[in-house]
Image (cartoon, rainbow, N blue to C red):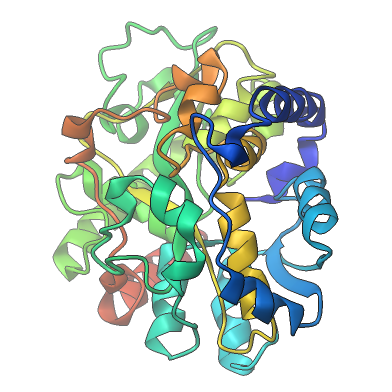
Length: 380
């Protein structure tokens, strides 16, 4: 999902302009402007002084802007040292092999990874007295997640929906099935070999389940076998299972693409005729989060960085770079108009009610085993 960020160097110019604008306009925020910054208490800063002046983070490659790191380092004198993973599943596997991995913060992993690691006793619980910006600005919906009410062990930094997009230069926007998962799973003949699906068992199978009227996260064997039949029938229309099919879209080889909210937002910068679809039946929504592993040697610095990320101007810089909707309740108002209008960035509460969130039954036990068997047969 994140290898796409190597192609985002063009965003640096926009990012720089945004940072300059926000920091100039809001130089008084820390002194009590519209959205004031709240510093961590002295107790946290005293502990930071007893730590190594280093913050060891584990993240996707090129996911967070270097400018953001540089600003943190300049203000607090703490050097950020970044290690990378290539697949989100590596996060859980690495900590299983070595529960005392000395990372201070893990970035970009999904909520399910945080839940799994918490279940194994591998995460530190957060001290919210040291996170005043987080508590002031994180949207209410993200304070009461069913798996972590009150954000005891993870902080959602951005959210996303699983969507599909189509190239309106070649796909008639009046196609009767557009707007439904049915267009992806019962496409007209002319779209044979013109569809890409996510190279991700959970999302490919989950969307087929949603199309059938079942929960995205179902672990019911009958329902999952019906989803398999749908995917096997669809296979003749699929040119590739690819989680970042930018080249296929740009070269007009793929006309319909299953993806995530922010990914298609970025591809649409190159393909102006790309249109995003939130399927009317509902879809999956999730969040990317940050958490502090048990092996952290610098937990106070980790809290300091989390609090820094929820300064409104800093969070706006990050969201503009990442391209996924914010969990910060005020940041969307600083985003470009085109982003605000992109389907999936602002979601109607009535639609959100149709969507399914993280449920571990899809990633453990029978739910996981059946998905892996279906995926293996589908990829043959």
